[in-house]
Amino acid sequence: MKLLNKFPGLLFLLLSLVVVLFDQGTKIWIINNLALYQDINVLPVFDITYVRNHGAAFSFLSDAGGWQRWFFTIIAIVISVLLTFWMAKTPIKQKLLLTAYALILGGAIGNVADRMMYGYVVDFLHFYYDSWHFPAFNIADVAISCGAALLILEAFIDFNQSKKDDNSKKIPN
Image 1 (cartoon, rainbow, N blue to C red):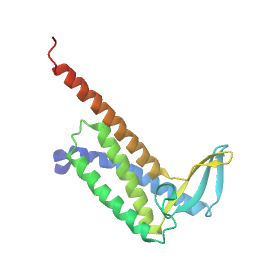
Image 2: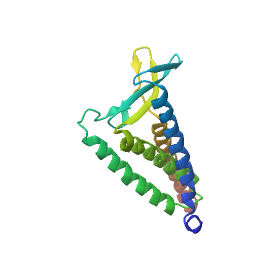
Image 3: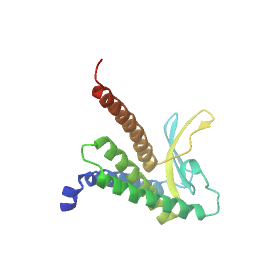
Image 4: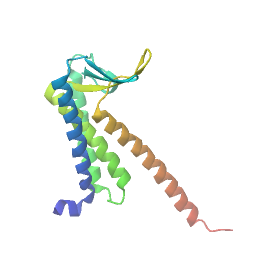
């Protein structure tokens, strides 16, 4: 508890934990209930499809021979350590920034867990239209993408706020 008093931003680690648990729970359900490449049609443009991603986002480097598993694992661990450090240093009033960090951290840990346990990432959310297909992804990827979007939003808000602060300091003529 003393740690949370000293570093209240770490309270947002609970959001990261929720992301990891939801991500891993959905992946366990997929592995236990679907055969590889099996589809469950949900909507005319959306299937749940069990696929294995040996690479990074959108199967980047998926056929690189195996070294990419450890490369992406190390990158995600380093990013996770940095995010945790930043969360500890970020004031609790910066909730948007802390939420962004927590979502990215939870997503990174969810995908690292897959790489460590299986040697690949379990993907299953598959959107498509006609002959166009978006690469399958998972809950961890959604969390990372939402976290990245919040980081961009926070940067715009911070930029506009600092611009407003600069204008209020100017002396009128």
